[in-house]
Amino acid sequence: MAVPLRVRDGRVGPGMELTELQALEERYLMQTYRRAPVEFVRGEGAVLWDAEGREYLDFLAGISVCSVGHCHPDVVEAVREQAGRLIHVSNLFYTEPMVRLAERLSESSLGGRVFFSNSGTEANECAIKVARKHAHGRGIAEPEIVSFERDFHGRTYGSLAATPGLAGNEALGPMLAGFRSVPVNDAEALRGAVGERTAAVLIEPIQGESGVYAIDDEALHAARAACDEAGALLIFDEIQTGMGRTGSLWAYEQTPVRPDLLTSAKALGGGFPIGACLATPETAEVLEAGDHGSTFAGGAVAAAAALAVLEIVDDPALLRGVRELGASLRGQLLALDGVREVRGRGLMLGVGLAEGIDAAAVGTDLLERGLIVNVPEEGTLRLLPPLTVDAEQIERAAALIGESLLTAL
Ligand code: PLP
Image (tube, rainbow, N blue to C red):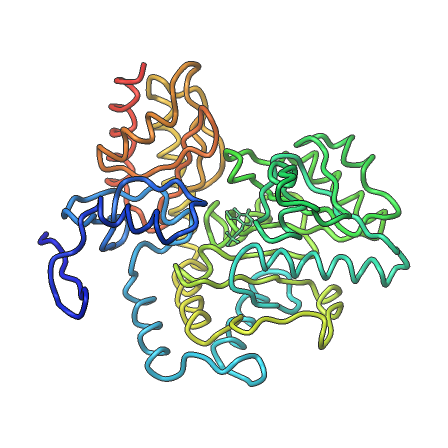
């Protein structure tokens, strides 16, 4: 592929060199990310191309965002069509894509109402507000939210306070009060932590950012029972696990419990920023006019994109494919030298590497070989390919991981 042309200083010419981009990034962007030294310019399905025309198999999908693949024609068309007609009017008025999306999300999940946001962390902020107001309604003056250690719920202050691994960053303090955590999968500790003051238990059914660790059924049962006993709400953060990632539209469908609130984002918009807090009919009435809001949320283009994504993902054949391809990928990975275990469900997999293998070095080597994965913790590769990936791409990815591990052993 030819080097892409760009408009620069009013002239059309070849794109910037990577080193030039890096220098500008360092000068003009707050240095909160460590980016890999690649500039991507095009994507299609599970494939990305960099500025040099090199092809990559994308087994990260924008961190579980591009679940229908890059630039899926139906999503592109829905966005193009909506953007050409109406982009934004605010939540002071009605727009059809927003209302249709709310109906579709509600009918496919908890049956109540939806609050839209622009990101995952904001979807959780809404759930936290619902839980706190619900608790105040039960006479609790200082409501508390319980989550598991190693959970990740986002970067805004409410979600951050429910993210124990980051909430300890004193330089960002003071943190929001009213949050506590218990060890992962410790059902006994969870029962002990939920009491009179508890507004909600907020959990990721499979912890994604900390390395792909599922919450076991015993802990989920304990969470549901403890919430029921205390009158508290059970919130599932399905920002990473939802929208088909685990082989059902929502991960909770494959667990023994049903939450009172569910948050979604990431794959919901197929790359367009949109999040949602989904409620049961009982919790749908907690927030009233003035309690919450967002200028952009539920915007027509993002909602149109999400409707197109749901049309593709909320399909039994696609979801069966996710389960089958996931099982096949898991089997191929487990057969590799250097793989200790494979965790997760569907196409959300954490590959635990053998003792002594430097996962970060493997991740870097894989990028050089043309496979994109990420390393959420020492010793683990995380694989989140588009749900539309095919069997040949799965085999190619497993083969590349095998080759890389052979050099790392
Ligand atoms: N919750 C979970 C489980 C996530 O994985 C993430 C992002 O990685 C978030 C919340 C935050 O989402 P966002 O980055 O869109 O704010």
